[in-house]
Length: 272
Image (cartoon, rainbow, N blue to C red; front, side, top):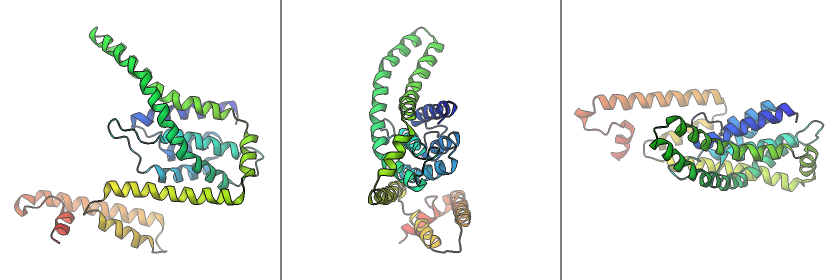
């Protein structure tokens, strides 16, 4: 990994760390962070594959109020760097083995990232008092400066581990992956698939309502049809969403007379 690549990886890590709290531009999402790291290191295909797999795990992760979800930023960045190190120049490691190993390391890394987040928030506590002091003096520039410094801490907490991982010799990571027995690499692949199923289950648990269960069942039925491609399934999903929104808006316009809830499918299901 060249010097420019390391600088770009650290920059991506910095942006991902900030976005882990801001949730605005989504740089911390595995699909985005892993893809960007794959591009700047010359492994875009593997980066997309890793990011897509980790995204399935992180589907149900969300920051709600003061509750912070497992750290998708550190998991994405660190696992992508490990994968890239294992696929270094001259490496004979199977890309699938490197990706499976990176997926297996992602969940422990996401938990470790929570500790770093708590550390950054503890350090940021005095900054709040400095901001209060600046506000009392009507120093708005000072308030903005402390806000920027506080959020930069979140970027640094990912950038520093990323820089440290970039310094690890690629030969060491390659040797570790090559030394893995087949049963261990296979187990990591199976475990990664099971963790992705947990991510889906978390999303379903949050979205489970009477009006969406028919779409859930319909999705399984359509997915079983081998003639339908992913593009076709996506188009059907968009069409069903537009139909649902249209019916919902129509029910709202005439809902006063009918006394409905504004949710046509929900009203139909509740009648049973």
